[in-house]
Image 1 (cartoon, rainbow, N blue to C red):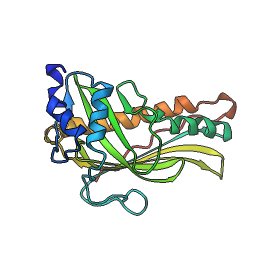
Image 2 (spheres, one colour):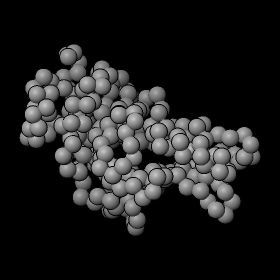
Image 3 (cartoon, rainbow, N blue to C red):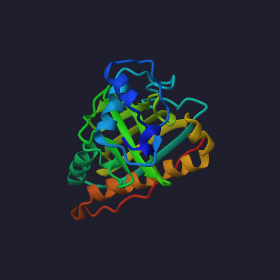
Image 4 (spheres, helix red, strand yellow):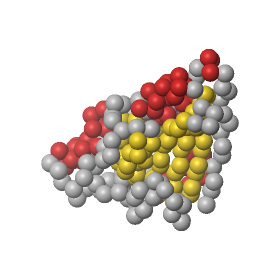
Amino acid sequence: MGREARALFQDDDINAASSGDSCYNWESLFTSTQPSEQQLRVLLERNKDAPFSYAEVGASRSGPPPPGYNVDRYRVRLGRGLAVLEKARRAFESWAMFDLGWVSVFPRDVKIQTGNLVAVVGSHFGFWSVNISRIVFVEDPHCFAYGTLHEHAERGEEKFTLALDPSDDSVWYDVLAFSKPRHPLAKIGYPLSRVLQKRFARDSMAAMQVRSQNDSTGGLPGALLDADHH
């Protein structure tokens, strides 16, 4: 294992993870090299029974977001009609909203199912980050939320929704998130963290638009509705 990756992994960490030792609560989630699949599997195994890192689990399902968090809401129209909805559905279920070049999910084929873990891997500002979350709830095949575990730079929850408006057959992609920095680097680099959050939202919307494009619908892509900040 390379010297540069030791912020994320050490040989003892792998041994501890494989033995089920839950006393390890490593929060060094940043490295200068891209993590391998083996390393990501170790992280997921290490967190399979880990608790959420915030108290308000499931709060994005309904009602107002909890106080004390940054609240971001984004919404974009993908087009109109059942053909667009079907393309958007396939994109949504394959996590296309995370297929951004600088961000990806692992495993790539993780099912959108309550309790499943997902690692969000990002490359930014010359380093790599890995953040672990667990799916909190799935309301239907096109709406789910995941929440942060302790090996995540932030704490909070993010909900993704794909919906058809029956009044005009328009198809919409929505993201609602409440979060605040948890890792010391996220706190120190708070303005940069917010820049990355906004970049993810913008790129995620664009990715869903591209994957849902259907010239026959006559619908134009919708404008990105900016976030609320609290």
